[in-house]
Length: 91
Image 1 (tube, one colour):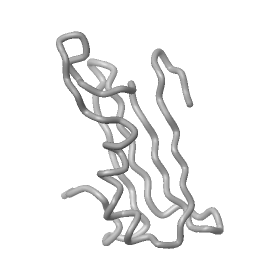
Image 2 (cartoon, rainbow, N blue to C red):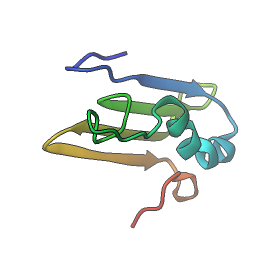
Image 3 (tube, rainbow, N blue to C red):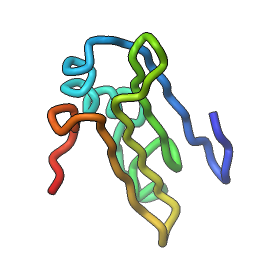
């Protein structure tokens, strides 16, 4: 867990089932950082940001996603070792 100003988890998982991990990534993010906007927390996220990486059982990464929510610098991204592994729509 990183602590820039607020908490920001770093999640690393290992699995050789690359396609299943890629398909489930959006739901995995929702499970550890659910989105519930309130007046006190308009972004609605539990964490200031997160970094998620999936590696095969040899430690080679094949998928990564991240978000950060400190205004005005809000953003996120994804990387995959293969086009078919991207968990979110992208251009």
